Image 1: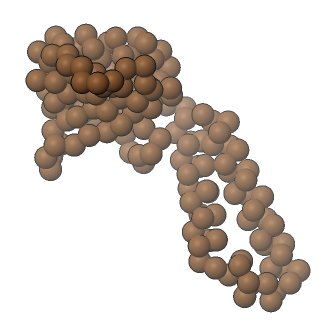
Image 2: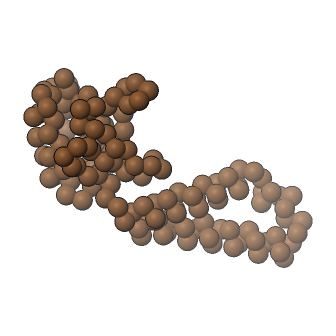
Length: 151
C-alpha cells in the first residue's frame, strides 16, 4: 500500500509542477482550465489521499485484541476502536473481499466496511472474528450470497 500511496503523491507532484511551470512561462494561462476551481480541488484531493495512504500504510488495517476490534480502513482518517460488547453483527459476501461490521456507537447504530484484501493474514483474521463473534452468541445466517453473523 505504501507504493500505491507514493505513486499517487508522485502524480500529484508532477501535475503540480507542470501547472506551476505553465503559470511561470505563460501567466495568462491562469484564465484557462488551470484557473478552474475543480482542478485545484482535484489536485488537493490527490495530495491528501496519497499522503494519507502513504503515511498510514505502516499500521495494520485490522487488529483484534482482548477488549476491542481496531480498524483502520483506507477511506477513514481515524482509527475505529469497537468494543466487543458493542458489535451487533457482521456481513461478508461468500467468496467476497469485503466485511461490514455493525456496531453500536455513541450516536446509535453504525457500520464500517473493511477491504479484506488489505488485511495481512486475511484467513486468520476472518476465522478469529468468526470464533469471537460466535462465542459472544451471534448466529450465522446465509441469505443469498451474503453471510451474516448476528444476534
